[in-house]
Length: 66
Image (cartoon, rainbow, N blue to C red; front, side, top):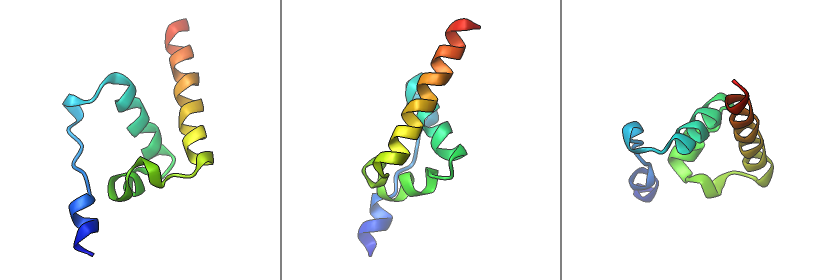
């Protein structure tokens, strides 16, 4: 059980790339951020990963148009 607490990552926001920031923001909006922090990105289902990727693509497209 100590492995879980050691695995929990602290996110240094300033060190993240803009894409990674967006990915974490979307995960938080979908209610998945705690799971990602505790178990890592690999713990997400393909469906959840696809939703995050789709929303990232949509936002990038919107940013280009703005």
